[in-house]
Length: 93
Image (cartoon, rainbow, N blue to C red; front, side, top):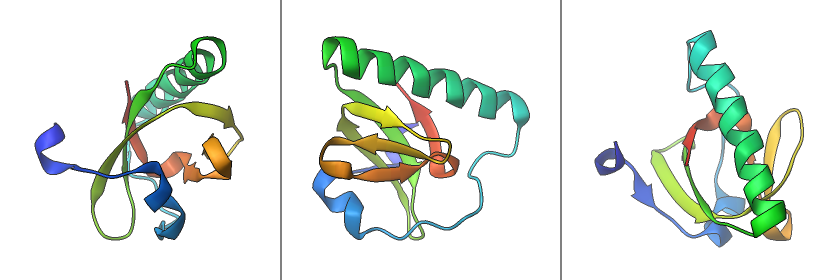
């Protein structure tokens, strides 16, 4: 899976543009994604563990290795208020 994704730094995410469409089209995958987000949030808050987030902006697929600090109904929030829309995330681990 990683060969089609480019690794970027968390600091670069603020300048990215995100379409409103969802990258996933299967309800089961969407439910799995929410479970992965909740697990990443727990790991981030309890153990300050970094996880890999596989996501897509308006140009290409990317990976960031970071800590999830908070989650809203629409976004995953990283350190320094950096946000990735949930609907643009493929996978977290």
